[in-house]
Image (cartoon, rainbow, N blue to C red):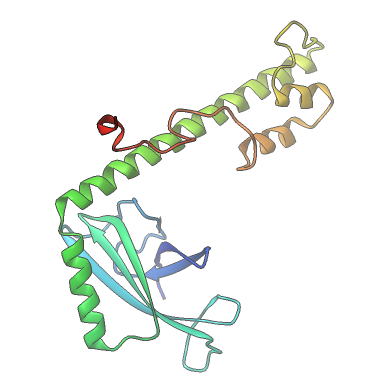
Length: 206
C-alpha cells in the first residue's frame, strides 16, 4: 500500500488524522504552521471526504458503519500548512469547487499569510523556550541525583528551593522526577509572552 503523510486537524476538540499520498510519503506528521516536504509553491487547496463512526473515529469502505460524513479542505501556501476547513456532509462537485476557489482567494492575500507566519514564529519560539527550560531542569535533576548518590546534602538557602529537588531529597526515583518535569502538567517558570497575548492596538490607546 505504501506510506502516507499525515495532516493533523482538530474536530470537536479532538485530533483527527488526514492521511495522504500527495507529498513525499515519508510518514511525516504535519500540523498548522508546518512546512510540508514535497509540497508545491503557490496557494494549493486539497480536499478529502471522510466518514466517522459514532465514537468519532475514521472508518473506510462502503460497508463501514458511518455516523457522520464530512468534506475536509486543507490549505497550503508556499508549502506551509496554513488552514483547514470542515464542511458537514459529502459535498457535490460544484460545492467543492466553490470552496476551493474561496480558500485560494482568501490565502492569496499576502498580508494574511505574513500575519499567520509571524504568529507561527512567535508560538514556535515560545515552545522552544519552554523546551529549553525543561531540558535545563532535567540537567539539574541529573546533577542533584548524582550529588545525593555521592552522599552530599542539599543544604543552604537554595538547597531545596525547587520542587524537583525536594522530590529527590525525599527519595523519589530520578526517572520519575524527570518524567514529571517533562510532562505537560509539570509546573515551570513562565516566560515572556506565555501568559498574555500582545495588544496590537496598545500604542494607539489614550
